[in-house]
Image 1 (cartoon, rainbow, N blue to C red):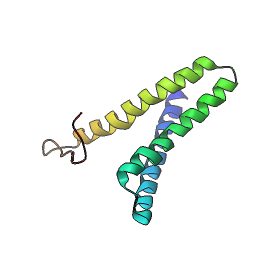
Image 2 (cartoon, rainbow, N blue to C red):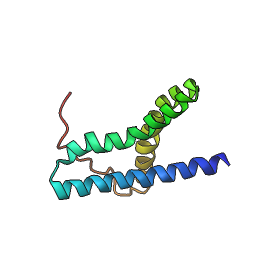
Image 3 (tube, rainbow, N blue to C red):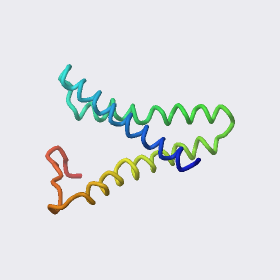
Image 4 (cartoon, helix red, strand yellow):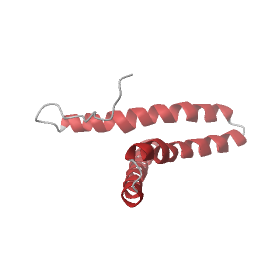
Length: 109
């Protein structure tokens, strides 16, 4: 039962992440708000709010260790699964060498 639950939670995570990106694209087209601003605000709030809400729910139930594990584990899971897995899958299907990474908006540290 655990593998099915985990797989379904990842599927729903992908569906909602796609929905947030599409919503940001629509807001950008309709209102002309920069995608950089939308990425820092709407997308960041959309990914953090469910973790905050679930952490508050379990903390009110007296399960503080579960709330702390959620705060730390959710970010690790998001970084590992949301970034590493798609890049790994893309690299498996890549036959023409490295893929281009646009870095026009990056500033040196």
